[in-house]
Image 1 (cartoon, rainbow, N blue to C red):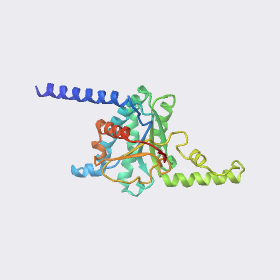
Image 2: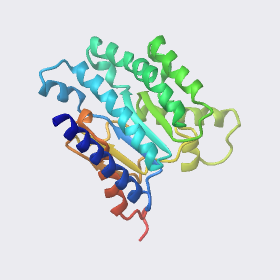
Image 3: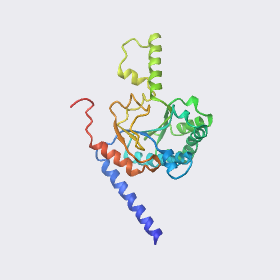
Image 4: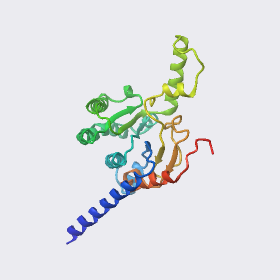
Length: 257
């Protein structure tokens, strides 16, 4: 009887999510959602587990959120997987984090292919271990012909470093005579790692922290921000829908009236 009740409740909850998705899609859905996935360590600590257990659970959340974002019709989902500052963490934790893309993409890749999702990355991949690079490059290669939602991993990414690199490239191209006009905002954007992507419409940060932590600083100039106390491993499909529904209530004027 209990088992039957559990199946009924699960089916009912699934129907509710499906209905909400259909309702949301009648209005303006953010084309690019960026997420700072925070709170894995605290999630584990609350349960007297090692921090890596939180990161592993957080990986499952990425899978769930990717699927529902795709159903919503989101064009790009960028997730902050590893920042340039994260190298300061204990080596054992960093080593575990570097193994996660291999596990995640190894198990989830067939679904990504079948659901027409394309894997991309921003960040300096040259500094991450070869096994991590191989997993990411394989996922990018195997999904390169997909023309649906982009699942964009920010891996060894830092926004200030990205901007500095863009400025240096512009200076070099100016010295070489490739650039002859004044620098514009559009020009700077074209030198960033996200040059082929639209700027985020909605940026979500979990765990109660209210800061951008060196994530897509240039690109988020007019992004709608949504913060939640929910720790990333507990972030559900319903929480994403709540964030999008809140986004749809806001008026985006981009400095106008």
